[in-house]
Length: 194
Image (cartoon, rainbow, N blue to C red; front, top):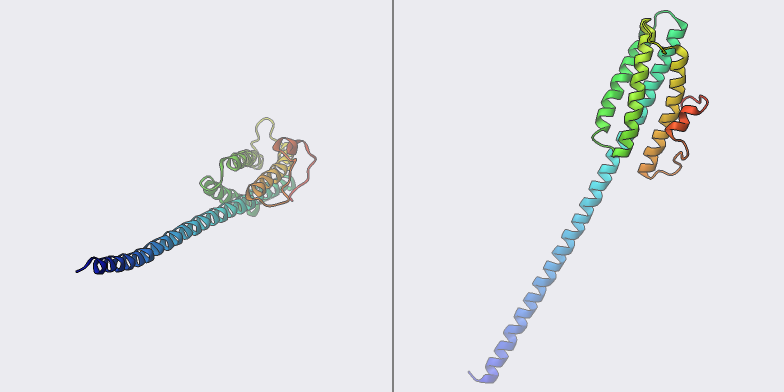
């Protein structure tokens, strides 16, 4: 074989190898691009699922706290009216149990700043529950009175508005209720549910 033939053969082999290698490299780059896109899509999906779970926890927490506070308010009204209020007591027990379960779920789903606020509201609701139950049982402690319980109820509506505003802000929902802190809610005139 002469040098010209060998050179032609080498050029042909190099050309074929280059073409095959080019196709292989192009395929690998495309595969890497697809994997990166799948990874990005998976991360977006995970973020979306986490936001949806947090939103669901916020909705349940807001609803159960409002329901619990409304049931406490109804129980206080029943105490003031006198008479048998077994259905109101049952509703209060159900609202308290629901809120306990929802709060426990929120402890695993919501960020610490919101959980701290929700914990404060939870403790205040449970303290109010104790006061209302003692009043209902006719065994009040010093400082327990329907008027004191009503002031606490009024203040708690403000704290719930503040908590809801913070949850909305955390979710990026516009129109959060700025300027209402838990300390200012205690000093406002009674506004009731909103």
